[in-house]
Image (cartoon, rainbow, N blue to C red; front, side):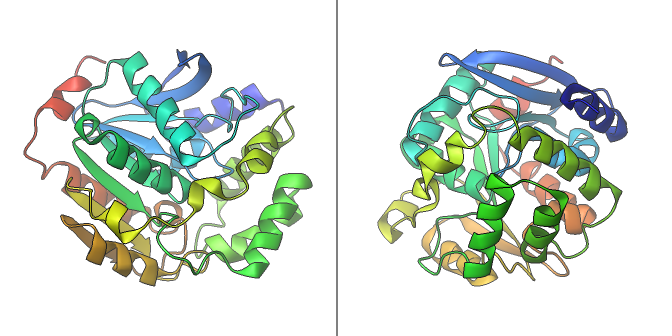
Length: 293
């Protein structure tokens, strides 16, 4: 099955109308998905992922939000330029992406590496977001990633296969080994075989997930929800406790029975936490930005 056919199959399984688009974000061709109406929620996937990581929860989130999920630069079906993939580069790309869609102050939700990018964006451009949701974000502790997980990451990036993905799942999944997991994994493995797919991994080399200082985190004044899987073995829940101490207007939501992918392991409590937080925000500009589609 070719890549486009796999993508369309996954989008059809979401079960709601989903717009697919591609736009130039600062000259970088960026593929994205968009669905729903209401407060605007921009979803940033983790390393090695794509917009379709969010497929299992997109319908539930889009029932109350306008959900926009890009393939981050270097990933998925977006462009993969030969650059240094550090946090400032990702944050600049995100600024261009929001500008291209005419979004002024959405809520930004970032998972894992996407969470580190969301933090960087909030620090550099505090006027450009309404609130912040961090899902098992990277960049919060010097403890880093377990050695076995690092080996699995190298394996799945350089010799992508179902076996490598199953090994990686030991560190990131608790319950998410069902049909959704298999279909999304097959799509992502096919993406990893695209030309230039290794650029982001080789040119990044951990720059995007380096720890933030306490002083940097303390600059974040936005309402912030930190969501963590209680059984995350890739990035420990204690990282979230540290972030909650450092980020002034933050609160921590631990989801029992979930690993590093709480939206896959425990989709209902994940969506309840996210939607409860988004709809509790007093601002209207983010709500108004996506009403038209």
